[in-house]
Image (cartoon, rainbow, N blue to C red; front, top):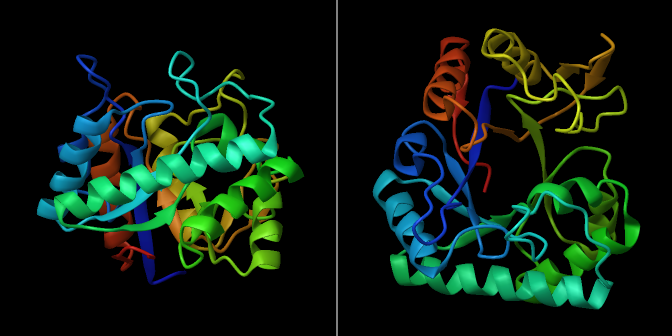
Length: 251
């Protein structure tokens, strides 16, 4: 069992007068936050407030860039030309870097959001575009992603560091990919999360068909926009700490 692991959450996803989640409360439990960069959610004021809260809580900040898809919350695949995708990500990461510095912190890693995150598991061209963007902005920033993904291979070729992520509240296919949110059972019931998280810490995940997938996760994600997200984040942290595991950012 891993003795140290990171807990991360997607935050900063409010926009204008629309509020999503209780980011400050979630930050009481996690060690890293993935801050929306304005393309799927978030705006400059939300980004700055989120980074300022991270400073208060002592939480590590990561960039959470996405397709240009506010209407779809970044959860719709988009066939974007690689050069355009790279430019979009450079823009988003760079914007968050400036906002984070103004708030007194730094961007320490990059975790793509939503449909882009899932696409770069298999979509070679978009995976390479994401890696190129990170390499252009800061080649020392780790990319947080799923094991066995195309973006991991592309990052290795470019010498960009990576970190492996697992999800506390999501079901897995036998190939290690996430069950689509369009499918029933994609998001785990509360009662199943504790055992699932313990398995992750032990280095494995049980897929929907009952098969076991080996995974050496550096970080576990608890979604900040899920129902009961604050309680779930606290429960996951408690479950891990009760198992003797220290919660600490990987970056």
